[in-house]
Image (cartoon, rainbow, N blue to C red; front, side):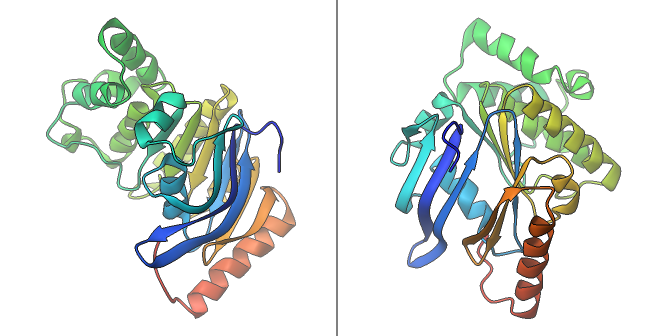
Length: 249
């Protein structure tokens, strides 16, 4: 386990009601890096991100941010400490304007007044197209623009750890490629990005580390560019394709 990691997940188990989805998951993510979380549908990727943020409780194990345990901390406290999530499906309010969606992202984290205006401006800096559409309802944006808005909204509170769940969903290949370049840039600015994605191949090209989940267990957690990562990904996807079983994300 990396001693200077921003995020450390140690032996975490979690799930839904009487179904355990994650079994003793352990990995680390450092600042300034992208960590890809790979796994077939149902491997536990979404469950992992929700547990890190506190949307689901860990029934065993520890989540640490900057060395301090946050396993029992409420979601609002984890956000205040520097966590941010772009959920699967984006979680935008379609009838609200781009600007209002962004402001909501800040207010939910306790950012107000002049600080909120400055935070929104900073979050918009990587997204010039959005800056020109502040009064447009989010529901009228293209799929790519909605994903950019979801990402910008997560950036408003200034997270150090950014969790992305299936960000490629509904995106054209060209838009997805552009988004990956931006995600890499966000990490290069000092953030730790943990990106859970089923279509993992393009993600590996911008990632430093890769965590492969298979039936809720870590089968690989190391260099994203290694042949071992490729082998474990192939094995995890192939086994699930041959025996689909449960489909809890």
